[in-house]
Amino acid sequence: MFNNMIEIKDAAHKLKDGFLVAFPTETVYGLGADATNQESVSRIFEIKNRPNDHPLIVHLASINQLPDWAIDIPKYAQDLAQAFWPGPMTLVLKRSILAEDFVTGGQPTVGLRVPDHVVALALLSAFEKIGGKGIAAPSANRFGHVSPTTAQAVQEELGDYLDTKDQILDGGPSSVGVESTIIDCTSDAPRILRPGAITIEMIERSTGLKVSTADTNIRVSGSLENHYAPQAAVFLNRTPEKGEGFIALADIQTPENVIRLATPKNIEEFARVIYSALRDADAQGLKSVVVAEPAGDGLALAIRDRLMRASKGR
Ligand code: TXA
Ligand code: MG
Image (cartoon, rainbow, N blue to C red; front, side, top):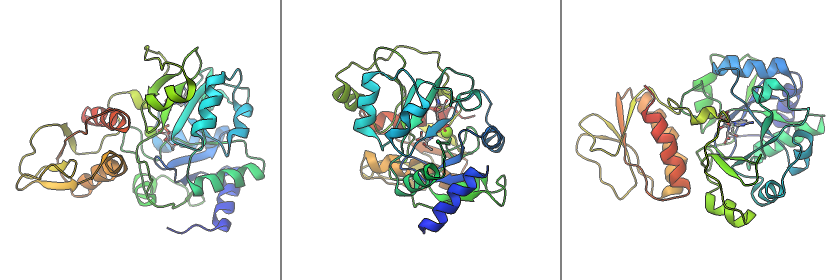
């Protein structure tokens, strides 16, 4: 891992010139484009092979850029932004005219996030300094695949599809490891669209409001089944057999002739290593992986959400 300011400024100029820059965040790596440049944003969809009506998250340098992108921001959303940005949280808000259909998938809302990673923040503020308004970035994987948590994983996923002028910034392994909590802030109370490291409890404590769990017809591609999936078949909570991969907390022993892919000591480490362990299964050519899911609320809930979808990935 090596990034100096010159490399980061260079990347900001590339974005301004219409090229793509993959960059590290604390959750997973993103594939970034100037969020106001339709042609660049359309390349993200091509490269990922992602359906056009799936909205992208716009990444901001700071909370100061929030009013550029969103209107009618409720007080509780301001409170959340103050409390958890920079951090692993995306707010879905009513969009301003800056957030065009090609970013929002034609929806009247926009997803916004200030990531908590030195390289991402340096890139975002260098981009802002040269007039950039925000960086649209989905996870830097092909549609439906496992999200990348290292620069090398981005290279393996997308290297064949990127232009020589596009760039991948290396910021080391992502510290959280699962994607941001997405919170719909378009009604009276916050509603979670995708669980992540910012938990229901944290949201309720910071806003004083009850988090709604009512159903929504808002489109969240990460909430589709058949997502976050490696080539290997993923099975949950059964005894692994000979030759299968196995991922479980450290206090669970490895049965004989099973290939242990990860041995996290706690839930945080589980989140951090889960995607690289699933990638490792593919690198080793394993046909199937068994995961013993972690119990509990909070981050464990986010891990189980992704694993449930990964296990339906075929
Ligand atoms: O942690 C993350 O959120 C990472 C890093 C790179 O920031 N990004 C990420 O992006 O996970 P992506 O595109 O892989 O997943 C973003 C999810 C999608 O499921 C998308 O449908 C949803 O956010 N989303 C974006 N804008 C939305 C909106 N206006 N309304 C509802 N959902 C939205
Ligand atoms: Mg994704």
